[in-house]
Structures are given as structure tokens and as C-alpha cells.
Image (cartoon, rainbow, N blue to C red):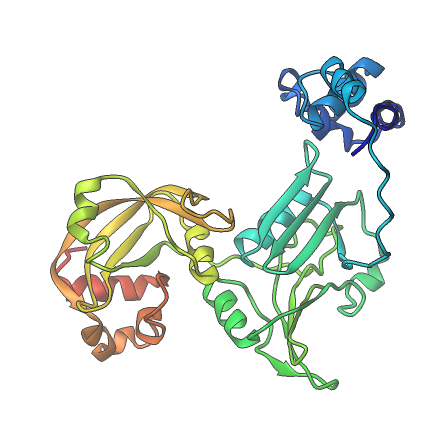
Length: 368
């Protein structure tokens, strides 16, 4: 436990950081409700007395005020100093330099299935993203860190993340619209490499933000290149009729589509936009498209997910098909030979191409 003198030193350090223009201070001051609307610049421009720093330290320690913290510390018995723990290195965290921390974090979340752990600053100047046991930090830079001739070097800017089942991860990203310049290719050192396209927004920004996937010591690494996002207007969502049927969906009106716990399906939910349509598919015994639903609210955190990693969207029933279109019919239709439903029927949220949408609607008696 920290003693009162330790808390005093922490408060004085905050004052010094404010004087030095440290933007990390903004997030800590915004923890006080009366300052929550201030930007980092406004925080650094305001007066910052020691009393305010002490209030921040007290609140972070779980007290309402510095006086409350002081009373408790003075009344507490003297703590016995614990022996110092043994030195142990816990992890190494790659730090990627980016021109827009918020945009980079959104790319890793929306396109690659990572969660945003934190964003520091208003606007963000530092952040972190993670997926499973992998974590990357993102740091704002004003300009390119390397000269023009070196930015194109894929081996220069890289984060290396071990991955299990690289082929499944490749399939997830490919289905989610992440662009690849080549399929998995064996490299000279015995692993499989897979460069894929990431965001590139301005010519002077670091342009090799691309993850690369490796198999063997299976890994995902990151030298950034510009790429385009594939737009999708149509989808397919699956539900067991015994759990949530089309009739229940109609009766519920706009409702959250919760419970998705697959990262590939999560990427599709995050790509959905209000107004887009999706086929409603009864899985298990029936195995048929029975209706059309509409996205009425874009992705937001799934309230049923305790981990905070998954999302949901709000859907509203739009129209029932004149006749169900079964999985067997879809497999027999040449126009649907490449449909995700036909080739990966277990995925609970799937993209549907324009041609596939028209073909299923025709089979289901829907007039377009």
C-alpha cells in the first residue's frame, strides 16, 4: 500500500508533467466529471495547481477528495514493507508509428478483429489493440519516421505475432474483405508468409501498415500499404428456430442480434451499415432462408458478452419469402456455387454478393 508521502509525490509529479506539456495528463483530469469535456490542449493551457493534482490522485485511489484520502492514511496502521519481488520480464510489446491513432485502431478492430484496449488523448496520441494473447501499441508521429527510400522496405517496419491455425485466420480475413497481394506462400526460412493490404490515407504517411501472416511458428506481422475496403450491401444471418425464429423476430420489432462469438462473424457485423439487408436463415433441421431483415443500427458492444470483445447490431424484419430457399436448393443452383452459405454453412453471419442476393430472391419468390 502507498503511504501519504508517496501520494504527495505522485501529485507533484502530475504538476511537473503539466508544466512540461505531457498530454497523458488529459485523460486523468477528465476522470473528474467537471473536466470531462476538455481536450488535451485545453487541459495543458489551464491552470493546474497542486490541489487539483492531489484531487486526481485521491480519486484514482478510490476517495472523494484529498482530505478523505489523508484522513484514512493517517488513521491506518503502519504497513510492513514487503520484500521486493524477483525480477521477471513479462512481455515485449511492438509499437507501431502512425499518423492517425484513432484510424489505425479502427482498422485493426474493424478489419482484423482486434479489440481496442485503450486510446489516450483527445484526439488520441497513443493506444493499444489486442486479440487473444496478441497486443500492439499505436503511437502518433507527426511525419514519416523513415526516409522515402526505406518506407517501401517490407522488412523494415514489422510487428511479429504468433498465430495458431493460420489458414483459418486467412479465411476469416479474406471473407471480411481484407485485401491480399498473394495467397499464403512458403518463405525461404520455412514459414508461410501472407501480405495483406491495410490503410494508406495520405502519401506522406507510413504506408506499410500491412499485417503479414506466418505459419510454422505461425505468426502475424505488420510492415502498411494502401488498400481499398470491399463494400458489401447484403448479408445472411443464421438462427436456430427453436431459439429465435423468424416469427419471433417479426414480433420483436427492432432488436439486438446478440450472441455472436466468432471473430469472422464479428467482422461482418462490424461492417454492416444501417439500411442494408440480410437474409434470415433457419439453421439446424430446417436449413433454409425464410425472410429478409434490415440493419437499423450499426455495430455496438454486445451487452451479453462479458469479455467486451464482441459486438451486435440491431435488426428489424422486412419481408417473409414467398417460399423458403433451402440449403440443398442453394447448393444445386449454379449461380450460388461461390456463395459463402454453400461453402461454409456453419458461419453465423455471412456476406452475400449482389448476384447471389438476386438469385436467392428469385428462388424465394421475391419480386425485386
